[in-house]
Image (cartoon, rainbow, N blue to C red; front, side, top):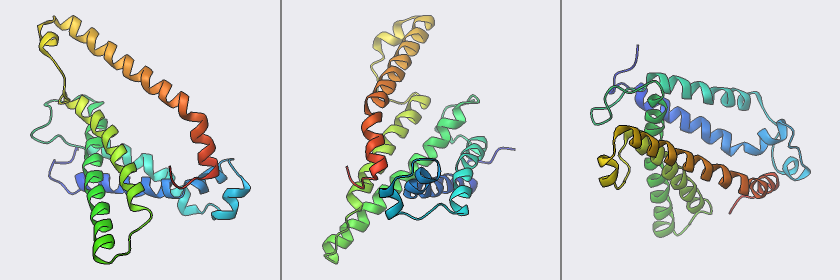
Length: 200
């Protein structure tokens, strides 16, 4: 049985996903060392992997699957979602929580900087990373809800077959762009990750 849109599980699972995902990212060097990316630079700075790290790594996809299965559409979302729409709706819930987290990090930094005159080194970088994730994930959710900004004057005049062709072409172009973006940046990203650069 799927949860009601007002049940607590609609809040708990996205928050649990963010918490476990944050743990995995925070302890990324530990996972790199455990799965064959052992370097002296990492070993000198980070602890060996523990059982808790494995448990949280395994819990992350389980939380996502349960969240996708139990997500329930709100009144303003599309009617009669398909089986894959649960992925986008769960991502939308996670994105909502991330926006609140970005605001909390920025407020924390403002209070520390201007009230206590003790700014942090990490708040700016974290808010930029979180905002980047929000941008990408919100775009995915907006496409699923068909609420993204688009010029649809010509699109609406086309027969449904041409509309589907345009949708397919635009999706293929997005996937090709994403592939080459990852392909072009993979080498540099891997080198920086293995050096475990903390900024930039």
